[in-house]
Image (cartoon, rainbow, N blue to C red):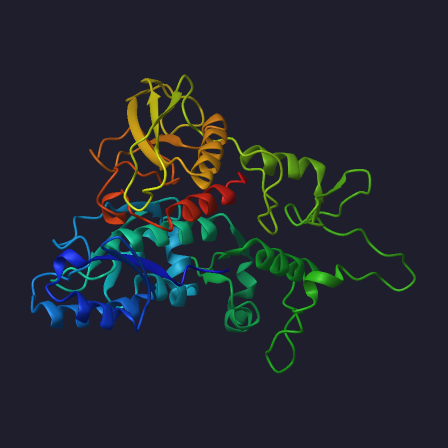
Length: 428
């Protein structure tokens, strides 16, 4: 999985008394100048270094001269699955470290030790700066990167169980399947296994071949070669023909007449695939999207678009596209958190540059709106109220100014970021 390694900040010459010295410092970085603004791109570490050098130039210690110059505002927390977060912290710790960098901390409440025993529970993820002064990278960037990372990880995870008889070989299983998280139940119950679809399918295949025993363990205590177990399929007895491949979902042999193969080449029982697609039209093995993803946005909403000749910061050659969303209040349906209960409506305004890329993004957002993907019903991160219409992880610019930290412009990477978010949902 690829992760964003570069970010960008805006440096304003107006914050410096010696523009020449500023130009000299910025030569060491990837920067682009427009009017009095410099867009500087780099890693968290590179931009931290830039922050320190700029502080030396201004002599200021209370804030970094990268906009905004005030202390960063509070970043809204994110409520996520405790089980998924436990997997991320134990099996994706390096990726999580890269996302938060050295200037920020990503923390969970309550402690994951509690969430571990309640997989259906949620934990709250918070984002804070490790330093008193405002760092060059706003925690809002960290939150955005985390949300994207979490969504991609969660969409690929599956949970299964391993018979309690394998408890004594737990270390060998962990060594053979390093991408899976094994959790022992209290007492002598089965092991709970969490991991990506493909790796869960492999261990299911391995267990099917060794059903009823721990025969996959060699005399020296190690596992037999399971790397090929997911590709060879169940073995046949001498003199018999080849057996039918098992369905990765139910692990039962697939009859040819019932077998359905997706364009990604993964096959399943027709009935199993229909049930999986009823939840989400993605391949249960690799996560590739098939068909059209329909969200949980309430019915009756409107998306109105107007255009003006005024420009957005960083887009001086183009006018402005204004999008006005209106979702009326109503009653929650089966796909919502509290069916039968009322929910609060909302009105939101967003802005795009009236450029070719802006027009393309507008068309994609309209498709997302028609597929009910822009909004959902849940807890409002603004008011903290439940049963409210909220954004559904497709980021919008709700302000014309203020830069990325205030959900406004200039932000040179915004259009490419939101297009990537839409692509994950099958809109491209």
